Image (cartoon, rainbow, N blue to C red; front, side, top):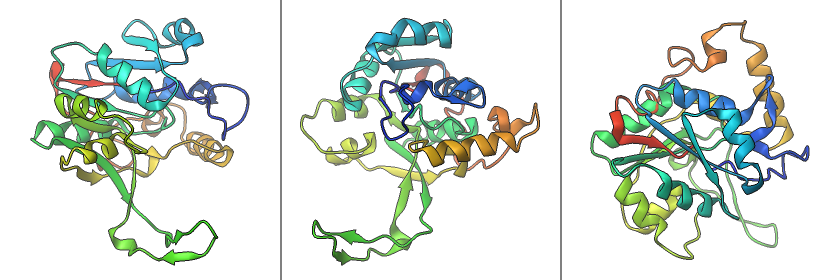
Length: 247
């Protein structure tokens, strides 16, 4: 799990993953979702280099915390090298998606274990999307019915993800983009509305509101896989020791 980002768009002067959400750092809530999944057996978190010990104490002994790199790709590379040798399925999850249902985590893992080399959760778009040139003029309007918003966790066969991260200077905004550069097919499964990414202040307000709507002990507030949408089916779906999460 890459969690070394500064989160400048969110503001506040605190690393985004450590910003409080409902009284807990977002990172802690993201880790709780992985712990509640059925098949995640190891969690590796790439933290800001100066906060490795702080994050390790915050998350507990069952999470391996390493120093992240300057960029997200560097953090994932380091985390990939840190997982146990016997792991064959890897999930990469954003710390900034603190309300991700454990059921979605399991669904991604289950799809990889079913034989797909790369799996990503997606949602259909409700807004029309325009491709715009540098001068601000619209170039074209892509058909919305073929466009999808991509979420995490993204799941991969370990050998596929390792090969993707061996590539150099390939522009990509997510892990699946690197895998696509290998020519490996990427399969989509339904995502979850709750798995949105907290990037800007309004996202944090929305996340707080969703938590506030849940009564104490409500399954939704805890990220229980039985509550809310179950589109992905969970994080690893009984992957045993073969499914590990990079966060």
